[in-house]
Structure formats: C-alpha cells, structure tokens
Length: 575
Ligand SMILES: Cc1cc2nc3c(=O)[nH]c(=O)nc-3n(C[C@H](O)[C@H](O)[C@H](O)COP(=O)(O)OP(=O)(O)OC[C@H]3O[C@@H](n4cnc5c(N)ncnc54)[C@H](O)[C@@H]3O)c2cc1C
Image (cartoon, rainbow, N blue to C red; front, side, top):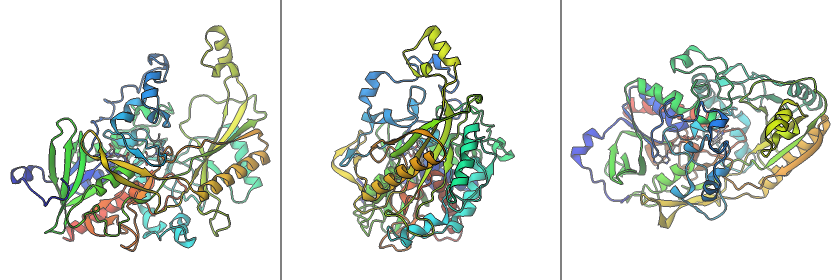
C-alpha cells in the first residue's frame, strides 16, 4: 500500500539500488537516461511496456503495401473493439503494434477526453509526428502578462542553450528564418518546398507583414553529422513510413538515439514490464528513496532505490503516479501540499482546418515522398493582447497534387485504376491549426475511488474540456486562414471544425506545473518538486502553459537541463 511506512527488505535493497531511477522510456525519459548515464550515474529506467530494440523490433518497417493482409486498415472487429485508439493520427495496420489497445488500459472520461498512448520502450517517440519548432520569448511571458496563468519560472534565454543541446543530438531539419515568434535553432537543411508552396509562400509574404510560411522544423536527419553517425543513424530516405520505426534511424526516437547512447556508457539498466505503482517517500529522511513497481507478468511488487528520481511517464501517467504516491507526509499525493496536483491540465487545440484548390502548375509534378509539412508561426497576441481571446496558434500547411480522381477510390481495380494512377489531377492546398489552451483549475485529472486496472492501480479520471477562449481562437483561425487562402488566389475554400475531443491532439500537459511560488505550483525552475527536491518531473506534466508550438522538443530540453542540474546538486551533496 502506498502510505505505509517504508518497509525495506534489506537483502533485496543492495541489488535493487541505483544512483538514479527514470520512470518511463519515451521522449523525455530517454533524455533523462542519456544525460544521467553520461555523467556516470548508474541509472534504472522503469518501463511499463515491452522492450523494443532498434531495427530488430520494427516488424513492418520494410513491408510493401501488398504485404499487409488488410491493405493497411485494421479489420472491422478490431476497430469496433478499439474505437478510441484506431482514431489516433498515424494508427494503421502497419503501426498498430506501437499503440495500446483500448480495453487493456481503461480510464474514466468524466468529460470526453481521448487519451492516446503507446506503452513500450520508446513510448510515443516511436510514433510521434516529429515537429520541433522552438517556443519564443512571447510564450514564456504571455500567461502572466495577459493574466491567464502564473508566471513561468524560466525564460527563453534559460532554455535556449538546452534547445541547442538537444537539437544537435536529435537532429532537426529546418531553415533559419529569423522569426521572432518561432526562433531559429541548430538545424540541418530543410526539405524543399514544392513548386506551388514556393509560389504561395511568396504571395503570403507580399500580402502580410506578420505571417510567414516556412519550411517545417522536423526531427529528420537530412544531413547527418558525425554525432548522428556515432549513434548508428543515417540520412532520412524520405520513405514517409516513420511510425513503423525507421531502419535508417532517419528520425529521432529514444529507441534509435538516446537509449542506445545511454546503454553504451555501461550505466543503463532498462526494466520493461514494470508498471510504476508509486514513489516511496521516507519520512525520516524527508525525501523520496525509491520506486515501487508491479511486474506486469508476475504481478509481483518490487521496490527499487535511488538518490534521485525522474518522472517521465508522459503527462497524465506522471500525474497518476504522483497522485498515487501517498504517505503520512503527503496524504494527497507526492509533494501536493497545495492540493493542485492533477489540476491545470491543458492541451492543444487541433480542431480547425481549411483547404482549397490551386489553379495552374499542370506542367509541374514532384517525385518521391517528403516526411515534412510547412509551418506558419503564430501571429496573434504577440507584442500586445489585441484579440478577444488569449493565446495564439501556429499552423501546418502544404500543397499536393492529385493522382487523378479515380485513383482515390478504394473500389477501383484493374485497367481503369491504372489509367487513373497515371493521370495527374489538380493541385490543392491545406492548413490546420495547433492552438494554445488556457490552463485552468477546473480542467483536472484525479484517481478513481473504486475502479482499478489489471494491476490494481486506480483508473485515471479525466475532467478536461474546451472553453469559450478555445471557440474564439478556433473561429479566428478559420476566418483568417480562409481569408488568407482567398487573398493568395486559392479557389473553392472549405473550412472544417472536426469537433475532436481534447486529447486527440496528443499534446496533453500540466497537472504538476512549474512555477516560482510553492503555493501555486508543484515544481521549481529546475523541475524539482518544491516539497521533495530529489524528485524531478520533466515531461508534459510540468508545463505551466501550453504555448502554440509542438511541445516535445521543449520536454527534451527541460529534461536535459534538469538532469544536468541534478548531477551538479548530487556532487554538491544537496540531494
Ligand atoms: C501520432 C502522434 C504524433 C505526434 N506528433 C508530435 C509532433 O509532431 N511534435 C511533438 O512535439 N509531439 C508530437 N506528439 C506527442 C509526443 O509523442 C509526446 O509529446 C511525447 O512522446 C511525450 O514524451 P513523454 O516522454 O512524456 O511520453 P512518452 O513518449 O509517451 O513516454 C512515456 C513512457 O512512460 C511509460 N509509462 C507510462 N506509465 C508508466 C508507469 N506507471 N510505469 C512505467 N512506465 C510508464 C510509457 O509506456 C511510455 O513508454 C505526437 C504523438 C503521437 C502519438
């Protein structure tokens, strides 16, 4: 039971003791492991899912479309049994093995919330979209400046060197565009615009002073450096099959990059099949001393011990673990003196998109694939709060050419299908939003009092929804993007609100936020719990606000920064 006084089995203690424990092996956990191992700390990574080894465990990576029994779709019986996960971006017959199954991992939605998960070594780093724009100084200051959140305890200048650190290692492609709202990083060459994008970019530039369509920043190796070659990774082949696991290591995942790097130090132990039950708090020492797990195969409970603990189970699972880590000192969850653990959960708003037809360019085509889209940096509420909503949105966009109307129909077979395949159709342009949402106390997660999973862990209860600000932001995106398309000559413009529930964006954040004041936050500026400083939370749970940019490269930078701080503090004897 969590909350029991620590009952240490001394025989097992020595062999179960490490310098550091990392909970979760995904994007952020991989970074914690890499940094800690490189600094010589014997590090145990606890992962609830199975092991995944680079190359060996990518069963579909080199399969052709005709090798799949259902042409890439899952059978109807599977879709009916898994209505939630089969809706996730990138889910298909070729990637299903890197996503959970709905019934294996239930949770309670008090308001509709689609919790997309990938439980294996590597977590969602195997299946992420790889967009890596930086935050700008606007996002660090906007919540406090415009009164919709607490002040961030760090600034852009604090994190900029750590962005560089992780970008150089992970390998991010992109252009140096000099935009204030989306600062440049350490980029290798971007993917090319196609002919239509090239022209539309210029038209947008001419029509708008504050809107910039740029080549996207993506975690794809367009020009690997010696550091990537040392990782055993090679150039992205633009196969656009990333989510199956890349045999070239062309995109960043913890399985291809950070974990093998940590392994080479000889300091890493990964324990898969280990659901973390709770963090063990020792009242006498007034610190966390270890982690209790449940072995998913044997259902046995085992304790591991360490000087420091990194919590990287992904935003909502980290909340779950912390809320479940109760003791006499912390009856409401680890470090939770202010009662705010689990609250101020937020996400990114992906509801709006527009598309339309582009005239001309019939004599132009492009060959091969591209794993990247273009981006547009946020242009709302930057220097001043001038909208009827707070926060901003960035957008993803691109132009593409049809292969002939008939080729889109799955019913087509035979000669007419072949003819359609060889005919090039018209050009089209699309754009979709990624909007900031406001962290609110009323958007929260908690633990079910009566429902448990197959390992006896309480189910997570989600109580997270949209508000009026989200609706206004969505409306503005739809109006502005349609007008912009119209201004640059795009025809037959359509607008969509997909009405997705929160969560489908897969950018859930918060619940254990960073801040300056222990009364209003759980973590300090180094991601240490104010009330339990040898515990670091560096995944999305730590987020004070969401910003509009894709968050994972920020989690990586925060994790690397916190891990290096932890090492310094250990050396000084402060932890
Ligand atoms: C289809 C898709 C597209 C995406 N596109 C982008 C994008 O373009 N850009 C971007 O920035 N982000 C993107 N994301 C989001 C990105 O994947 C996440 O932000 C990122 O993976 C979060 O990193 P993490 O370390 O917090 O969690 P994860 O990578 O999910 O890793 C968490 C790990 O912890 C393990 N775990 C959970 N609970 C426990 C427990 N109790 N005990 C032990 N282990 C546990 C999990 O099994 C998992 O391996 C995308 C996600 C998906 C699925």
